[in-house]
Image (cartoon, rainbow, N blue to C red; front, side, top):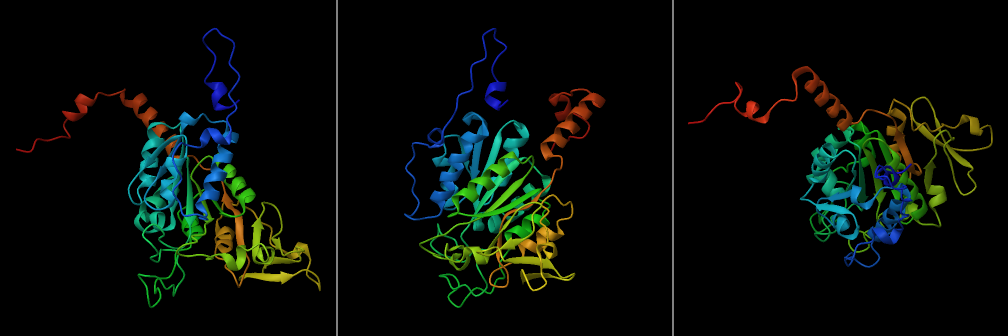
Amino acid sequence: MNAQSQERGGNGHAPTPPIKLTRKDFVSDQEVRWCPGCGDYAILAQVQKVMPELGIPRENIVFVSGIGCSSRFPYYMNTYGFHGIHGRAPAIATGIKVVNPKLSVWVVTGDGDALSIGGNHFIHALRRNLDIKIIMFNNRIYGLTKGQYSPTSEFGKKTKSTPQGSIDYPINPISLALGAEATFVARSVDRDTKHLAEMIERAAHHKGSAFIEVFQNCNIFNDGAFEAFVDRAVRDDRMINLEHGQPLRFGKDRQKGIRWTGQRLEVVELGNGVSESDLLVHDERSPNPGLAFLLGRMEYPAYPVPVGVFRAIDRPTYEELLEQQVQTAIQQQGAGELSKLLHGAETWTIE
């Protein structure tokens, strides 16, 4: 039974069949103002496509953003939305979720918004395991402010703010999310719409903080940042799709794989004494994030670039634990009164 049907009944009338929503129901009347050809369009389209499949009424969905090109997202969704300030979307989402746990809360952010200005909020939202979903558009550049290097820009990146090349080492978003103890970590690509929709739906059904990094092309200030491995002509040999319980195989004919040498991951060709049984089997549910961390560090050209779910484990959510604490305190001490708290022994007057 979905959320719509659960809310009906109890008035003496026959339950009304749930209304089947469509993608159009999630399209707002606002004019989309991204640059023509921007990867943001593909991400928006897939979110609007997946939303009806979740069976959640629009009034129970909230999109929260900070600042950046991606952060215009709430305007384009016909749901509740909150356009916050730089990097604070996870904090706003935390407040929304804690006071109203039944809401489906989504954070849309960019690499600069999430990992620079909002890095602290991003980390703590993940470690607390709030039941919120974070989609990070990673184009490795500050697009809205016209092309400065971002926390994910590669070392040596030449931009308007780094004319001699960046001397900052980039943040690996997957490593950071895993290090923050995120219970769901995934990656997809804007142009692979089928895979992207699958990752969004997986995140939506995860109970806890879900993080999706999306490689998103900024065709104005960082065009082709991921072209070396996402281009259709080469991606079979330069990307690998993570599938739970399946050996790590890739390649146009799936003739290549990843195995563990005991010290590091190694790319191998099947045949000549190497069989599928020698390959590493992906376990997204492992309580130890070690393997997921190693996979998240795989980068082209040394390795194929992984997409899919790196980690998906179960853990009590923050709002559940908080509610348990509140109910325990009420049982032990009574419901309490605000006036008594404000005039209690632990307060004082400044004269």
